[in-house]
Length: 315
Image 1 (cartoon, rainbow, N blue to C red):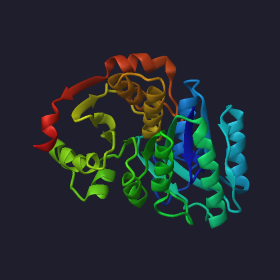
Image 2 (tube, helix red, strand yellow):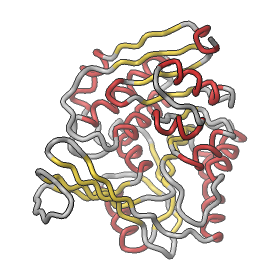
Image 3 (tube, rainbow, N blue to C red):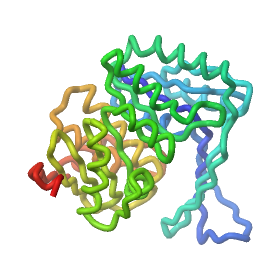
Image 4 (cartoon, helix red, strand yellow):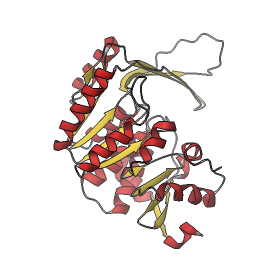
């Protein structure tokens, strides 16, 4: 089973607005509300493969009830810690030129009692899962090194931990050496303090992470694919050109595909292709965190992976 962790879930509200500009009033009939937060996007994408997946985190208020009902409606198993506060909303306004404006609420405060209840729950859940995917930001009230704690607990029980976060949450998390991380160029710059201008600087910055004994480092480059480091080698992953519809959730869909590939014991390159294809498929859909299985095989067939000598990493 795969366990997904969403510590700061949300109602994701997407509005498609023609010729959106600030200061104007718009009406739209093209909108969508979904149970969101990066971890729940991952969860939906994993569920689409009919994999056993369990979602956890914190839920509270009217928003929490909406999220719970949404997950129940699509058959996702979940066990959340109830909180006194209200889960947040995240708003994405997408214009017809593809540009996107996002407004992200901060989220609720998590009490020490609720956090301790979550740690106890997590420790129990670890016994029944094989892979853990933790995604997104940390809500107020919980320690900044929470992901570090969760990774250590998972590793103590021999579980593989995938971390997809940013800022200090990611910085502390990598200190515990998760199995896989997937920063983009901006997140890599913030994490290492190295300006990312070309492939050479990506390699230099990634060595910082490889020195943390992280098994797989995936540097997401959006429409340009990714650069991946694994067992002393570097891989360039190139994606086919597509008609971009909505890139929100593409990184989460990629994480889902990588987790499914790991869970199915695919070869490393097949796992990479599956994760990359999931992210690409999502970018072709209006719905956030959607993997269209009708086009997945075609996308996989067009993904190109180039394996480079490990000697390039330290030059």
